[in-house]
Image 1 (cartoon, helix red, strand yellow):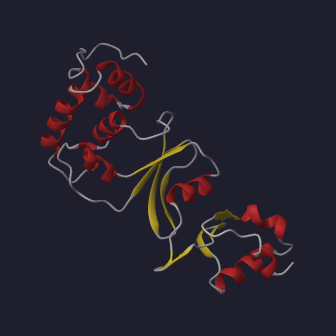
Image 2 (spheres, helix red, strand yellow):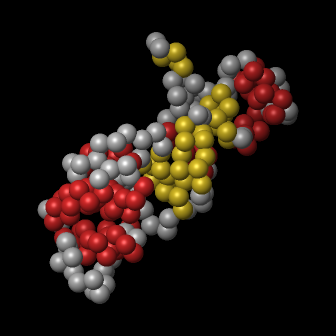
Image 3 (cartoon, one colour):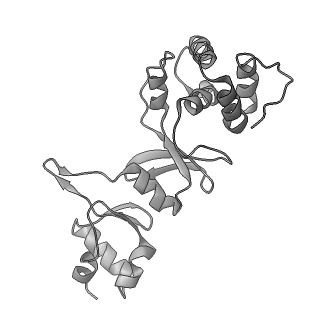
Length: 198
């Protein structure tokens, strides 16, 4: 098969793993290299390729969730960014270039398609972002933020106090680290020694 035959199987906007395309070619590595050299495909990472969509402004970047899904070869992950904390109204305003991926398989900082993704292995994370999770996640990561931590934490306490206590306790038991659980227990009407129930 020629590279032209391989290109016929490509769909714009799709991210491909090398093994996804092996069945279409008898010399996959050579043909992938040719397609990259010709500007048809973009190489995002080892064994990871993107067939760009074209807009009026040129090539568009890959969908980040799709990119992460293909990289992990898994749909069980949560993609977020510290920028999401700014939506909570607790005083965070900094903008960050990194994306955080909670998942079950990969740990470490990895550049995919020119963007930094921080992969963190966690046993528990929600399928979708919720305000409750973001509040807990913010406190989990408070020490990494370039903010006035005391002011932000006081604002988080006020915000948590307005949330459904039972739901917050449940989410805190699943997603809060030891320090976060200790900090938020008193806000939720629990003593430091009491246990959270999921």
